[in-house]
Length: 346
Image 1 (cartoon, rainbow, N blue to C red):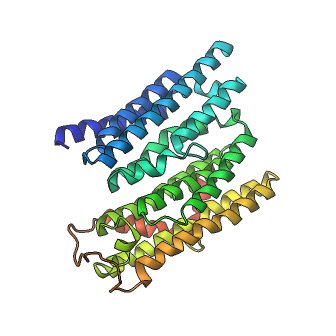
Image 2: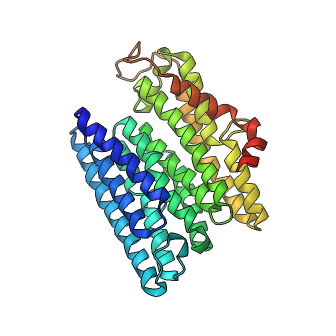
Image 3: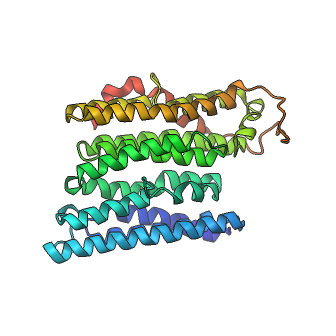
């Protein structure tokens, strides 16, 4: 990719995100989402590999379908109420269509089918953008319309997303697919509480972004794309892989790491809303995700080479680890003691 193309695409990505999260009119929000979709396509297809081209086509078709549903939802609401304001979504059919459109953009079950395949066909840095930044505008729209959404539908989407995100991640060997199913499960937790506490859902998304960025940057530094590569990556930098293990356990939600904080608060909030059954189901289903996070942590730090795999070992980094990886990894493990301060600021 040429520097000019990369600059234009990056600026368009930032502009599209900014337009969507700051708009109050449905047409402006839709325009921002379309700009985002067009801006990320060069990043996905820049390797010119057939798998990358396939991922680009899948991503474009799914996002175009979701944007069409979102536009139709806003038009239906405008026909019945005369309002184009995002916060004035009162028509039941419009609310249903919007939920489906946002679920498709976020990759919630049963609209998750595109997400693991697109991540698998993308470079590691682009997969990071797809897992974090590209999910921020749809999440913002979901939060702004949370008072109009159907609680039963969102609860079903949340439970199925957490269940399938944990279940499908058990049998994967490709790291990007494992992190894709991890994203689906975490967004399920966020969807479960978004109606009752939008600020808590947003904080959950922020903490998920922080932890996932730390994991992606670490894997990008070690050039690990699958479990067999991860089994020998500790020889390059034992300290970095130890930090990766903590970041993975934090994503799993083990106390006393940072990832325990959002799950703890979500279970507490659901219990307050007399949804103890939902909270119990989510807590049990999180054990599925814990299994494959523990497997990743085991392969990254405890498994000792030489192994029987026919894999060429890399004994040094191709590029140095940046300081941002260390900062994000530290935050992924150490924020939990600051929970009272975080709660007062939100």
